[in-house]
Structures are given as structure tokens and as C-alpha cells.
Figure 1 (cartoon, rainbow, N blue to C red):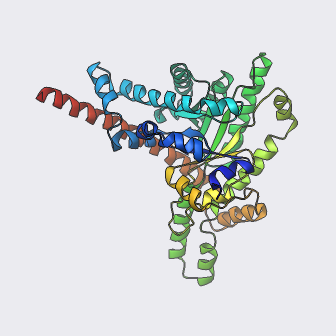
Figure 2: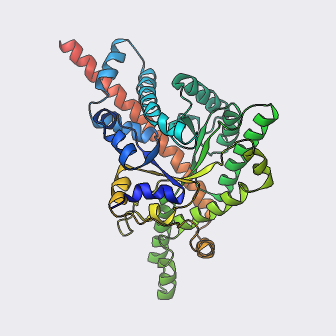
Figure 3: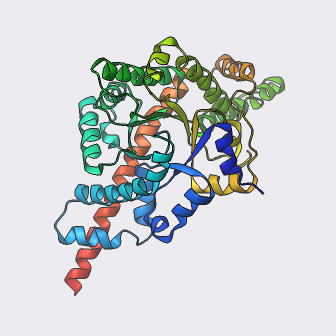
Length: 381
């Protein structure tokens, strides 16, 4: 039987792997996913690196050597991460070349501590770009108010950007505008726009996690059976509805005369990337979000569990434009019962920045602990 993961390409969707793990790189497991599952790119974040470094011993040798060289915790983090990013970029390079820069990217995140610092974000993005020295690198920058001008400036400088932590339609529109303005500026200066790539990472399952919790609280507080049923019917609807409405905006924005003029110069559309597509609620189908958001010019970045599940029983169809009227109605209905879109999406972005910052701190603590353990071993010897 055909692999459902590879079938997604026929619907215009690229699968990227939401993980970087040196043990998978060394064992050949990652290369196998490229060859057999049609994986076309990779994303990572501080949470993923923290888990990879603390989970096993794949990084111990390099960290030990860096400790001997007297490197700081920050230096060790960058050295470890940059090595992995380069390795993955080189494995993905044939895909990048074959797809003429559409796929084959690996993403590296600027420090979450810089989420509210435009200049700091731009400086770190440029520094990472020059350190990695791979054309198929994307720098991840969050779509915070301070992040939007940084995204524009980094793209304008000729650096690929994966815009992360997008939850709302307004935020998405700001991101798309920053991308197009950056290309217009490059073209105005006589610079190439055909080699710039960007994705807009729109987070999915987290929306349902928060909205469903709010609905549950309202159901518990209600004594009206009809009202309870109305609220219950809205569970599990917000995330897919939100993404489908955004996709409509994507199609509109990238089919305007404004972008068409750039397209003639070889510019790529800024594809929506569905992030956080693992199913958190066991009551829902384990490939729910992956199945319901399939369509042309999209990317789905999947963790290993979702890749395994989708390979086993994923159903492939062009689903991204199913029941757009129903999607809008679901969002309207949530507004009417007091679950306000603007508040929910702002809370999710704030929490997203905080979660990544927490993971960043844990990662540095893990490196510190490893440093101390190795130093103690050296003293004991």
C-alpha cells in the first residue's frame, strides 16, 4: 500500500519533521524518513533541543570537549545546536536543490528571550545565518509585535524566515505583509527575490486545548441542558476553523496583483505551515489535524508520533477548504458564548513565548548540570 505521508505531496502539501535528535541522525533513522516517508524539511525549537540533549548521551562527547576548552553554557548550547543544524541542512540539501528552494529547509530559533526585542532579534538572526552558512536555513522568529519588524528586516537582508507562534488572523496578515514588503524592497534595490523563502507557522492544536477548557468551564457552570449541548457541540471545532479561515486569507493575499508582480520575478509564496498538529485530546482522532488541513501550498510539521500514526492510518484528501461557511460560523458561535477570539489568540501567543523561554532555561540548566557532572568526574580521576 502507498504511504499516506508521501501521498500528501500529490495534494500540494509538504511534510516537515518537528524534531532534531542527534541519535536519529547517527542511526540513519532520520535519513530513512527522508527516503521512505517523503519528509521534505525540519523544524526545531528550544523545547525539542532540551529533550534531545537531556534524553540520552548522544551529545556527551561534544559537550565534554567544549567544557575542556572552557566554553560557557551559552557557547556550548550554540556549538551543539549549530552542529546539528548544519548536519540536517546538508542531508536536506538535495531536496532544496531538487525543489528549487521550495523545500529542504531546517529551522533554527532565535532566543525566546528576544521576543520583545526587535534589534536583538535581527542581530541574532544575522549572526546565526553567518555561523551556519547554509542557503537552506530558516531563522525562526515569533510573530510578536516586536517580531514583525524584525521579520521584515531579516527577510529584506536576504535571510529565510520561519515565522512562528501565529495564532490569529490579524497576526497572520501582518506576517504576510512583512514578507511582501521585504520582497518589494529587495526588488526596489535591484536584489534577487527568487532565493528568499518564508513560511508562516500557524499553531493549531493549542487553540482547541485552550478553547475546549473554556467550554468545559462554561458547561460546568451552566444548569441549562440546551445551553450545555450548544457548548458541547463547539468542542474541537476552533482550531481547524481558525486554520481554514487563515488559508482563505493566504489564497487572497498571494493572488493579488501586488504579489503577482513579484511572482513574475521568481518570488515564492509564503506558505502557511501548520504547527502543533499532534492531537492532545485522546477523545479526538490521533491524526485529526493532519487530515483536516491538507491542501496546496501548505506545510505540516509533524512530531514523530504523528508521522508514525499518519503513516499507519492517515486518510489523504484535499480538506483545507471543506465547509468554510461552517468554520466561520463556529468562530462566530464561540464569540457569542463569550469566548473571544482576540483574547484567546493573544493568550496563546503570550503562553507560547513563555513556554519556549522556559524550555530555553531548562536547556541551559541541563547543560550546566552536565558540565558539573563531568567536572566532578574529572576531579575524581
